[in-house]
Length: 340
Ligand code: PEP
Ligand code: MN
Image 1 (cartoon, protein in one colour):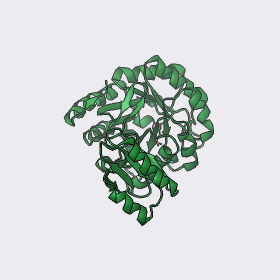
Image 2 (cartoon, protein in one colour):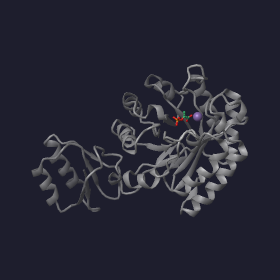
Image 3 (cartoon, helix red, strand yellow):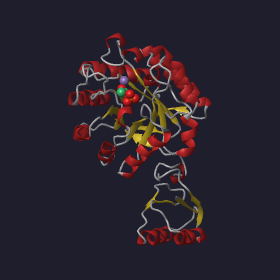
Image 4 (cartoon, protein in one colour):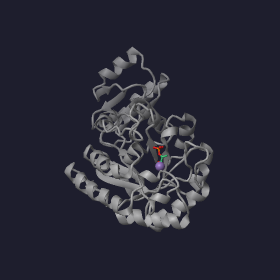
């Protein structure tokens, strides 16, 4: 449950309430929200203690949480939260575009890709150095060298970078290369050991939804990250596996309004891995922004036919620019703006 104090409640009073609970072995957490004190109570509270809280005139409301979550719950923040990577803010009412190749394919290639992405109007550069491939014979990524190529390209064109981490043992390399945002891929959403280790680094995380992950499971994974040190989480809907084989996956936009009620975390949509076909991405990107996504993440390539992974969904520069143009319009229509 979340204790929602009145906006003028004193710090001393909130502290006293917390100490009273902690003394009984009940852990509490103070939200970083500044509009009013919000305290999450982690452990089960005995009826007598609960009665005391109900009688506290400075506690306006005791909000039950959905399931056994605390920090990602909507009630733990007065306003939707914002996640900052470099100069880019995700979730602050400015719609963000993240783009770049599926895989980092070389130093010159990465510089060319970064220029293409920046010129098309995106703010964040993506590119995989460690690739989760279905076949062991497919290109597995350049590993550490790929991290260096990605980061250098991002710096050359003034963009923060996001890239997938597949193994906690690789974390030091991500830290060494000053990677701005760690992507937890769909296949690792419930790799709890990895989530815990990664969280301790305190680097913002893009948490993709698992191929068959429910919203509940997805939010529990976000709670793991928050609870273990990384509350800077952005959720990413990337399509789920359904009975329909006609497209790669099924883009589940129903989560957008739902998550607004369930969590304060920002959410971006990846229409590329959902549909898997470049020419179908634009209408889905429009729908995602119209439905309230805080941003989009797509794949682009200067020469899609040569891409070493996901070539069918790689956008050309002009296609990416068209999606940016749509996003500008739809952000305004939905009372927001496009990230400068
Ligand atoms: C990717 O971003 O290239 C990727 C592999 O994504 P996902 O984990 O959503 O499949
Ligand atoms: Mn990909």
